[in-house]
Length: 365
Ligand SMILES: *Cc1c(COP(=O)(O)O)cnc(C)c1O
Image (cartoon, rainbow, N blue to C red):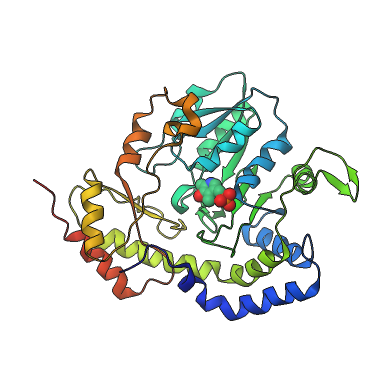
């Protein structure tokens, strides 16, 4: 069986270094907001080519802390992608802001910039976009709309570490960008971790306080903050893995290139191939009208797949209040998408096996 993602194998090459680094953190006696975190924040800021990086507890909090720091009045509207993982949108709801859902572009499956403007009202304060599957959104168009309507642009780049858009890294384009270092991400910790990147000094400073009870100095609280800190052990592990992110992404791009050129199955929709060397290929998401049969065929051929995601968030019980929305494109995408294995440890033979398995699928008559 070719597993969809084997974290044990993914982390194996780093294991010795990870053991040493985490043991160093354990023995140091400094577990929270210490030198490992500072070092990671500096390195990741440099990697993204941005002035500030603030380590936080996870990707969800990274989005939430950006929204808290902007302090939009309750009831403000935030433009969000209809097709995304629920974590992109939950922080909007927590803060009593109103998510306004926008359908995706049918080719990229990312928020369609052409459909944003019609949803802007006097209450709109920000556009939140998500760089799903490792591909940056159309940021020039989104930034232009943001500038014209005086809206903040917030990016959820939890799936797009190291992706490029017009030679700029994700993390350096939007007003503020949220990252997750959940173990399955392109840059993954061995537990939960996240970060915010921004060029905005004032915003960065506020998030530095907000993640630690709103505290500037010990026992002095400027804001009603939260507890969302990236711990020293996870930071030490991320310090080990960050230098290899580009190498891993290069491997992902090589595999994506092979899938894009060698998968020939009729009626199957491949992801866009216009930015193979810029996208970070967190996921390789194909579409097929007979998804269930294709999954079964691949499973029998020894290829484990996954669905990102089976149900749009507005159809989840958690968002019953949005279930009346009509988002046909988003719903169709969720019925048809299927993710093939794509990760830096796949061998050439395994990639060939995946390609052959897909190409030998015969449609049910
Ligand atoms: C993983 C992910 C998140 C959430 O990250 P956590 O670290 O699990 O909180 C948010 N948005 C997207 C698009 C993700 O893939």
